[in-house]
Image 1 (cartoon, rainbow, N blue to C red):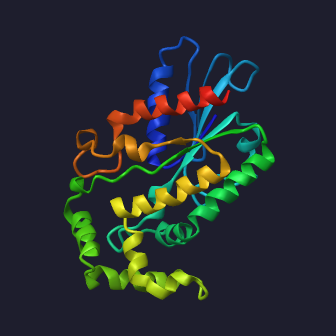
Image 2 (cartoon, rainbow, N blue to C red):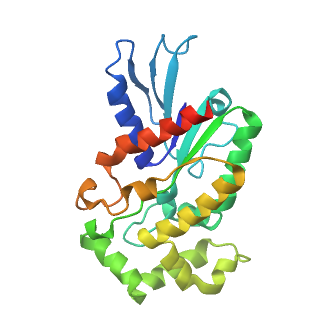
Length: 252
């Protein structure tokens, strides 16, 4: 089974490993920056073994159909919405332009990946994880200042963002018609996550992919996310895993 996504999915992979350590036949996590795997039941890569694989985000946040693990996987658990949002220029990195472009085509990206995975592996079980609702009350410092600035439509934040979108958007993109609103809709906050999840849920409904509603599981649970974070909810990770394996049991 492949876990493909951002740090919120990585946390679930790590907690699953803590549970599996209780088994006498557990083989610890092994791998590198491209893939991490853990196995039980039999020696790794032999008949009877069960392997969980974590693929960090790359290739526009979801595995392409040509990835060799796709053809071998029993199931794929995926989600990566947070990496498609920005807090520009406070959260500035080489990934920001790529993320902005992926946001523009999020529904297309999802549907193309799902179609590609099913083409390569018609029997693969797919489960989508919605993006965590962000608890904005946990932001502080420059992140809090930037978020409040975007909400107030402060030119100090909007103008650099608009210039960045002008730089990276194709000339024919309809998003160019209202760059200010695009900047606000893509901010790394609760509003941006809501818009992403609306797109993702619509695609999953259309393509018949079951969903772990992580945004609902964490909403309003301030106690479960550390100060200065607001997007990771480590105390609720076992609940997300419960949903995941409940869905997989129903698909088997």
